Image (cartoon, rainbow, N blue to C red; front, side, top):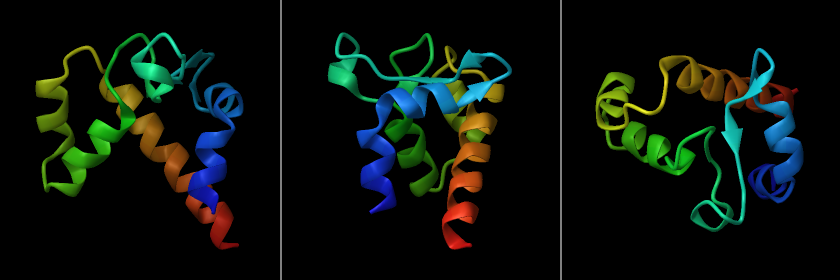
Length: 89
């Protein structure tokens, strides 16, 4: 249920997932059909998750996708942690 709401509210997602003042995740119909991507890239968040699920490291991911910064990856993980812990309360 949370996952569905998370992606249904794309505008809220983009506004809330920020590093400083710049968004770190964006979603636009013009970029990969609205798939959530790391800001200013065409790299889907799902690709990062699949790397982790496959046992690869953050460094492996960053090597394969140099347009994504370590700060963006850490910010996405922090946001996921915050949302999961808030849901658990």
